[in-house]
Image 1 (cartoon, one colour):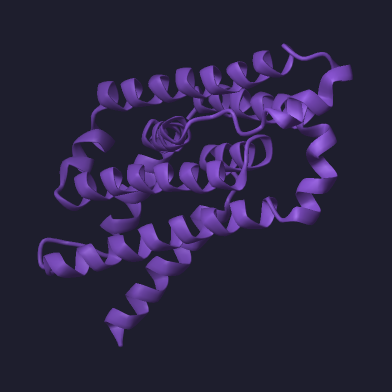
Image 2 (spheres, helix red, strand yellow):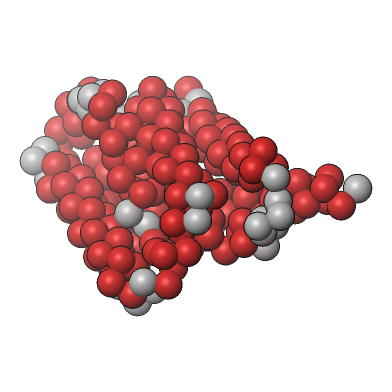
Length: 209
């Protein structure tokens, strides 16, 4: 019973963390709305691949080093800040290459992002987020100790990974429903600007984490 309760707790905490608006949420949101459902799915996959990296070093104990090393934490934080600023500013600059009178043309270019670019945007956005690293370290330190069987740790990790991937895929799917897409197509250029501003804002906020 205690084991089942722990699994449920991990699942619930992971779900709350996944649905909370943050860099992962907004990069999936942006690529889904500005580009396509496929781009959103690929971005979600990239996020999930970064989560595997976080889970791996957390489960083998390296995560403690990151949590307790100010220099490593700072490197991770400032790299994340720079990357979010880069992605956000890039989206804003791209949107201004088209004048408002050419919104229709801009909408037609929504698929101009490669599969690799979408994956890597999701991957780096999550991997370089120090809050993501601390979250996994904090979460698993509550449920795993030296006596915990290794397979249990892997199962906890699988639950967290599955929930995050499932949520972001669902988010992308809902955002790109034909009724929603039909309404935002004419405003896609402005969505790119707003999402770019939000990503830059999140990068600024990360400076004070």
